[in-house]
Amino acid sequence: MKRLITVAVLAGLAVATLATPASAHNVLLNTTPTAGSSVTSGPAVVQFTFNAPVQLGDNTIAVVGPNGTHWERTRQGTVSGDTVSTKVAPLGPAGVYTASYHVISADGHPVTGDITFRLTKAGTGRPVTVAATASSGGGGVPVWVWIVAALVVLGGVLFFALRSSRRTEESVR
Amino acid sequence: MTTSTTTTVTKTDRRRRYQLVYLLAGGAIVGVLVALALTASATAAVPGLVSPSTAVVVGLPLSRALLDLAALVTVGMSLLPKLLGPDRQKRQETVLAHARLIAVIGAAIWAAAALVSLVLEDADANPDLPVTMNSIGTYIKTIGSGQALIVVASCALVYLIIGVLAVRQGEAIPAELRITVAIFTLLPLSVTGHAAFGPANLEDVGLISIEMHVLGAVCWTGGLVAVMLMVVMDKALLAEALPRFSKLATVCVFLVGITGLFNGWYELYGTPGVHWYVALFTTGYGWILIGKIICIGVAGLFGGYTRFMLLPKIVERQTTAVLKWATMEITVLGVAFGLAAVLVRAPIVSGS
Image 1 (spheres, rainbow over the protein chains, first blue to last red):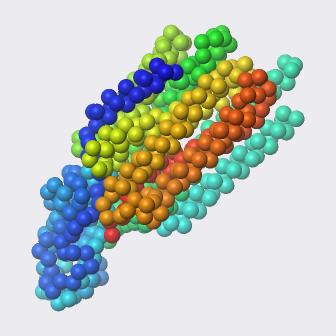
Image 2 (cartoon, each protein chain N blue to C red; image 1 turned 135 degrees about the vertical axis):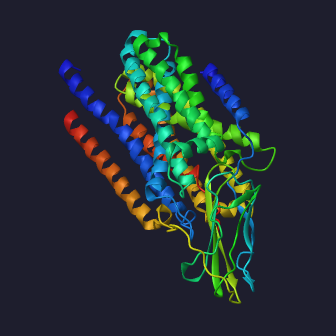
Image 3 (cartoon, rainbow over the protein chains, first blue to last red; image 1 turned 90 degrees about the vertical axis):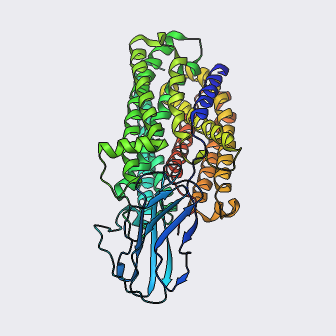
């Protein structure tokens, strides 16, 4: 058993030293414009700064204005070290705008989030047209669905366990 | 005991024993679903961007859980020759022949689950883009866990080849070789996730700690599954194997507990903008950690009962309810593996 554990520890150390250090699940530190701020004119660029580098991949940014209109010039963000940014078209009506991001974090896991800012003075811009941006999918599944599913499986497991242990007792008897 | 009763007992025994595999898997599914509920708000869809489909959101942790369960069955079956010890070679042979076959099936599922996880991870990371061979290639090139999954699939295939040889040639293929390959297959994935993150100069400690955590969890659960599936009906072999497993499990319980607490703290501590003790109680990540702590505690209690109340009787070859207690322990450990399958990719703080 001692030999086994030695083998295991050595194998572990070997792999640990091969691994690239300093991966991270990125955390948003700063944004331009500042989250929750009010601006009188639309920002030319939306930028998100994280605590760790962003990996190449599907790094996307959307700027959504009143009535679900889109204002980002390109959805694919430009990555530079810890930041991802995209150019924004001149904004239109005054109101609340949401800037959302989906980035590949340093550890390879996708990270998403959004901030809002308020445009206090209407601009002259027109929204951009974008291809399918339906924010559909599992991210939108409400909590209760998972809980109900968990309870159903738990019930099934318990039913199965109790039934087969009762049957076993009968057949042993 | 007459011959006729022996056969009926063996048959029902087998049914009862295989039940624990279903309970292990059922526990893992419950763990995955509970963890998805706990992290639902942190992974909610963001306006204006495409989020992964529900199939990917559920499928990814389920395939990771399947990968982990296949890994622990394979490792447990590989450990079995060592747990049975050097005596009673003849009596062990039927049991070990069966164990080698299950290990081969486990390794095949292990490799397949790694490849399925790779496809699902690509779909999860790039919800905007269709999954193609090209996109999977890019994912492997750029993302650490993509590379790790390929290494895992390859090593599992190496195990598969060695395992098939072992099925044909028996213990002539040394158990140590199978154990080493299985453990090596276990480790690459754990160092590519969040583990390698945190305050500088603690990174290496974090990496080794997460590896010891995975190793301990797999040897504990896998060893218990192997002993219960393969030798619980043979009192002579059980009296040999369980004391040896018990020593291994005692080490593993403390190893899993200490490294788990350290890595949980390390992740929360390393996250900017939130105190770790606040994050523990206010984030989905923290709640899953608490869930895992409860699971390890409960499983440890079941294990302790087996160790202190049942083991002395088992050594004297008395009949005990050890299978019942072990099955409960394995089910709870299954829940812990399910929670872990979501935890490994869960964000600590949501971005909004």
